[in-house]
Each structure stands twice: as C-alpha cells, then as structure tokens.
Length: 362
Image 1 (cartoon, one colour):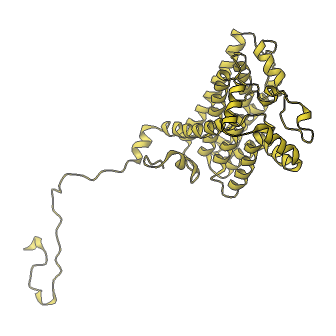
Image 2 (cartoon, one colour; image 1 turned 90 degrees about the vertical axis):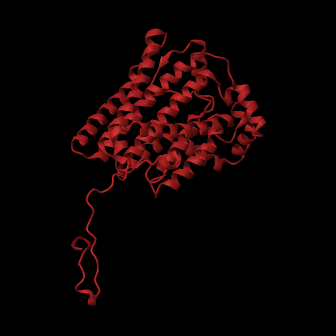
Image 3 (cartoon, helix red, strand yellow; image 1 turned 30 degrees about the horizontal axis):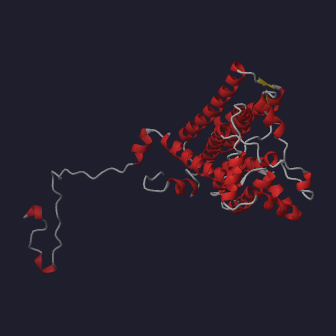
C-alpha cells in the first residue's frame, strides 16, 4: 500500500512499483487515463488536418489499426475470463502500438511551427560542459566492433518495449506496467512540446557531416530525417504517416528518456533488471552518434524520464478513490472511558482459601 511518508520515486520502483497484483478498479482507471491521452493526441492530429494543410496517409495506419483492434478484442475476451495477466499483455500492447502511430504525426505538426533553430545553443552547451561530439564520433570510427555493440543497443528500442510489456504482465506487475506506459506517453508529449519551442536539426545537419567524417562505421540515423524535417519547416512536406515515420525530435532525446524508463520499468523483475540496465545504459551512450543528438539532448532526456516517471506515479496514486484512502487509515483508539469495569480476578495463595475470590465478591 501507499505510505505518505515514503519517497515517491523509491516507492514506485521498489517491490513491483505500485504493487504486484492490484484490484480491477485501479487497472481500469489507469487504462481509461492512458486511452484518454491517446484520444487527445488523435484529436490534436485531426485538428491539424482539419484546420491546416496536413493530410493523413491512411494506408500507413492500416496495419497498426487492425492489429490494435484485434489485440483489444482478444484482451477484452481474457478480461471477461478474469485472466488479468493475459488481458493486460494484450491491451497494453495495443496501447503502446497505437500511441507512437499518432504521436509521430503530432511531432510532425509540432515541427511545422518553424521557430528559429537552437542547434548553435545546444552545441555551445556541450562545449561549456567539456563534451566534444566530434571526438566521440572519431572514437566510434576507430573502434568498429565497439560501435556495432552501440548500434545494436540503439536499435533495440521497439523490441525492448514489447519485452517489457510481456514481462511485466506475466510476472503480475500489472499496475506497474500501466505506470510504464503512462510515463512513456507523458515523456513523448513533453518532448514533442519542447521540440516545437526549441527546434533543432541535429548534429548531422548542423555540422554538415558526410560519410567522409565516419568512413569505417554506419551510424543508425545519420541525416535520414533532414529532408522531412526541413520540408515540415518550409511547408513543402505535409504528409502525416504512422508506419515509416522518421524520428525528427532532437531536444530532448526521447531515446534517452525511453532508455531510463525501460530500466525503471524492469527493475521489479529480478532476473531481467540488470540485463535491461546494461543494455539501456549502452543505448544511452550510443545516442549521440547513432541518434545524431547533442550531449545536452541526452541530459535533458534523462531529466524528462525521471520527472515523467514520478509524475505518472503520483497521477496513478491520486486516481484512487477516497474510499480506498479511508480504508488505509487505521482506526483511532476511543477516548471514551469504559462504562462497565471488567472484574479483576485475584490469585489466591494456598493458605488464603477463606479470602474473597474476586473484587466483585468482596
């Protein structure tokens, strides 16, 4: 149970997060909140299409739409059979599949604001911290096998998300699973909002790098997003897609935030926690080169992950009913005196058999 005197962050990460097996009402409230945020995101994307020049490429949404619908139907079936673990695995997979498919178009809409670029500012922040991006690229280029490990870790984002959902569901950490999904949605929405206000094209575009700068390696993202990013800013690109969408957010790094959320999410699973910690620390270290991020993006992404995890934990705590809170308050002892005194029995010595046997008999 929740204890108001415990630290919120420690309480949400230890012993299964918000609890291992929780009551159905808590899970339903968490699911309603998650579906509500997804619906709000859909509404914002729809508004951009109705009131602006964007148009939806419907074919890119077909696969995820059909898959999510089937997951929800089968998950609902298991819910009626009171199989909470199977239902959670299916329904939460649908949630995690749907949100990126509408979150990516929202990031496209945000980039279209076309505000002044902040690349030089972010690069100067790195220099002020003594962090040399080009030196790190050279290190990766000089250690090809090491870079392959980093590139593998960076590319493991989506497989990790699927494993986290299944692992938490099958081990019974059902509300902790909702905490993970809610915190990821909050982190994505925050990074989209910040990227609209502080847009940046990333290191590849800012430094105008080419393959000649990294002849021995092939970083994962490189300049692949720049055509779409610049097209969104100058108005020449207005397609909103789900499948095939490019990651265009530079500051803060959503990859970094996701890496820390994976660690927080898997901490209750004893046999996987250290594997996920090592994998995601590697992914975060790979983010500057393979994600084309400034070091300041990584630092900001770390802060976003911690704040959104704590905010999600507090939101789920606050969503509990008043009756549940009252039920946890121990009953106070009565201050009224007993009206009928209890008889006090007296133990008699063997030679005092003639004495009264109790105070009541005296």
